[in-house]
Image (tube, rainbow, N blue to C red; front, side):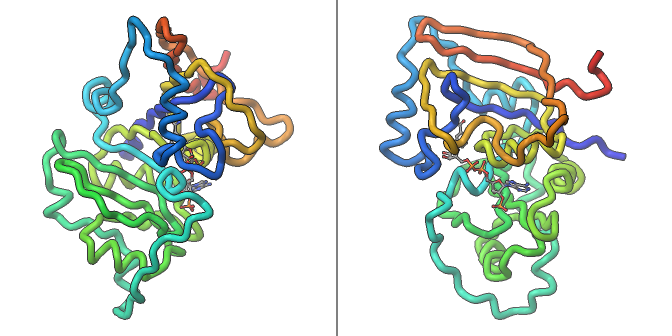
Length: 259
Ligand SMILES: NC(=O)c1ccc[n+]([C@@H]2O[C@H](COP(=O)([O-])OP(=O)(O)OC[C@H]3O[C@@H](n4cnc5c(N)ncnc54)[C@H](OP(=O)(O)O)[C@@H]3O)[C@@H](O)[C@H]2O)c1
């Protein structure tokens, strides 16, 4: 059986583990982006982390993973799509046009997004990057019709919502992806954690506190059951800078490795 792709998570957080300033505002929108950036003072000896370089060089990853929650706020109503009036049966099969999937990697990269509700609208294109949407059988036909019209690849992996284990495995079997870098928020990463899909974590802590019950954190998703053990980590490296940021790199300890 083919090994599933390795999953490496990379996140920035405040010292109290928050990955956003509030649940109601995405970090990519102002004023949140500015406020988030300003949590990290300029350091005299910065250790810049270039996610793409981590992807390509350190791990040989050729896919990034995001959740729809990082691109569309929960209270946002996405632009309405035209009704799909064709035969829907064929829609619920993977859409992987060979002219897109056949591109050599590197340099080609996948921007993969979990979106079972069909909320993300794709308006930007970047050289050497293609979007890849993980959807489910519950995803509206209008959305799958839209993805096909736009020539955006998708994998149908799950019934009510995306089955993350199936989705990650399909990245390997369908597209030959060996390593996925998740830059998602706490909702998707928390679900990936519960599904036992995370192999490594890069966490950059900014010298700031955010607080707030319900503010997105490094790992959200379902809580542990009473008596269920936390996921153990092995520290691989620590970098600090004079600005006060700390960069932590951990490997997830699999149960059989625990002494
Ligand atoms: N500091 C950082 O490094 C960083 C990085 C990324 C994002 N953020 C911030 O974090 C916030 C977004 O975080 P979020 O947690 O709301 O969004 P998120 O991480 O995008 O999580 C929501 C996504 O995860 C999927 N999901 C959640 N549980 C699932 C499960 N059990 N099975 C399958 N799929 C599941 C959802 O699926 P559906 O498609 O079914 O809804 C949705 O696509 C934003 O403010 C963003 O700006 C910060």
